[in-house]
Image (tube, rainbow, N blue to C red; front, top):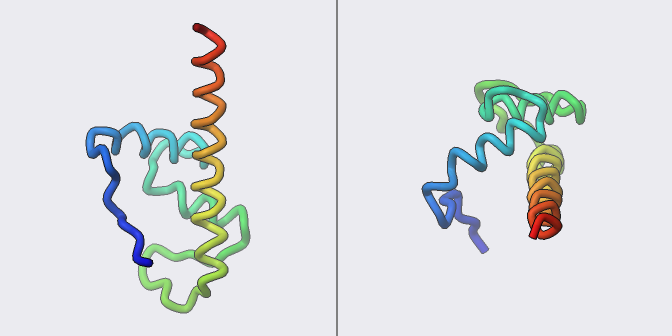
Length: 83
């Protein structure tokens, strides 16, 4: 099954980018994947990365995506506690 790169709510793009940068510990969301790759020891470069394995790519995306989901859950729980 193919995955979509398009988010369902286009207006949420900036918020998601900000969250990605926050969980990666960077100021720029474009740097987030490189920071995650460096932490995991994956040799991600700025140009061609066709020699990376699916496992290496999955490590990067999994770390970022998983961290974003954890942060979103934490934020939702905090909001529920305020009501």
